[in-house]
Each structure stands twice: as structure tokens, then as C-alpha cells.
Length: 270
Image (cartoon, rainbow, N blue to C red; front, top):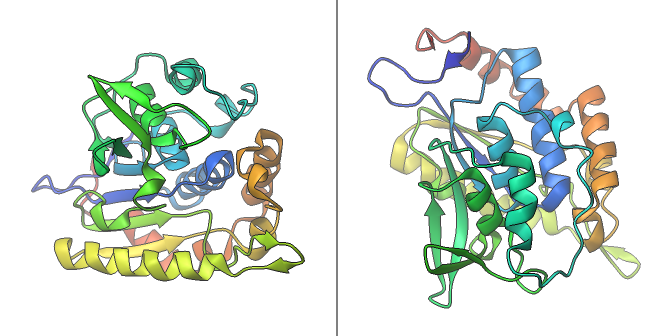
């Protein structure tokens, strides 16, 4: 049996906003989502999900009932790669022709330069469109339209996450993220978190729910030493297992909320 995160008036109990960040973000998010289920009893498969870039892949894994271990041994993607349909081929290997309408993927339509939340397409198409990084891969075609990575709009887009009573945002790049520039580490994560907090407040004004932010600790954040590490599958495995073994402070900080969410009477067994 699984718990369906909907209450009696059919307003979803839980929405997830999953941020971008390549294979690194996928590892972080899957470790956190699996911990939510294993330690807190929160089943996210039926939640309403908005994923951006790598977060759309995480969302696809969640809604299709897969774990990180199901995909940790897929071959490393090559980049830059300008083979037409390359990202769709990668996603097809993971998702086949599966559909899940509780997953939305944030993409960016070109040349019109406008954001698009993709819902009524296969998981593979949504993930490919949302993960096609400009300059590294060719835009992804769907129904005569061209899409590139949803991170062009925002790395998270939590402000347009689905309507729900509660929002959990999971970002890989938050307050502890300090990417190296020469001999310095720049506190880029603080800027990203400030923007994310504004987005979460916008979501709360629209929907009136509670919103929390889950992110990795400093030790995990500092495992990213350069831009290429974001798409390094071997590093991602190390990140996943470290987080599964050690957890993260932001989960513990929100434990009361998570326990209440897991035990709410609004859950229905299906």
C-alpha cells in the first residue's frame, strides 16, 4: 500500500520543488527523498512535483517509483554533445515511455525566450527538455517547439511550484555552496538561498501553505570543486552514499514539521 498525499477536498497535501544541479543534485535529492520515506514515513511518489534540470530527473525517478540505486550505474554522459536527441536517448534508457502527470518539468522555450512548465508529455521528454544545458547540448524538440534547461529561468522556480498544503524544496546549491574561483571560494549559495526564500514566500502568498527548505551540509557542498563536478556521475555516487549515511542538518532542523506531515489525519491509504 502507498499513502496518497491528498486530503478530503482533493487539495494535495504535499508538493516538492526540486532544484537543478546535474547529477550532483540528483544524488542529493534522491538521498533526501529516500530518507523522508525511510525515517519519517513520507511517501513522495504521489506528491505534486516541479523539477528543474537535474531536479526533473529526480522527479521522474520519484514518480516512477525508482531509487537512486536503480540508476547509479548508468554510463557517464558526454559533454559537450551536439548529437540531435542525445539527452532524450539518455532519458529513454532510464524512463522508457512512462508517463506521470503529477510531475511538471520547468523548461525554457527558444527562441521565444519564455518559461514553460511541461506536464502532458512522457517523463523522458520532460526530463530531456528541462536538462538540455545551453551550449553543452542541442535544444530538445517536443511538438515542433524547442526547449533548453529550465535553469535559465531559475535554478529552482519554487514560486511556481504546484498548489498544495505543504511545500518541500530540495536544493543542492544552498547556503554552504561556495564554488572555487581561482584561490577563492565565492559564497554563491547564499545568493541562491536568498532568491529561493523569496520564491517560497511568493508560493506561500499564493497558496497559504507551509514551505520548508532542505539542503546538504557544508561537507557535502564542498565536494563540488569545479563546474565539471556537477555532471560527474562518480562524484554523485559518493555524495548520495555520504548523505544516506550521515543525513543533513536541515532535515533534523525540520523534524517536527516532517513528523507532523507524516502523521496528519489528511492522509488517505489507497
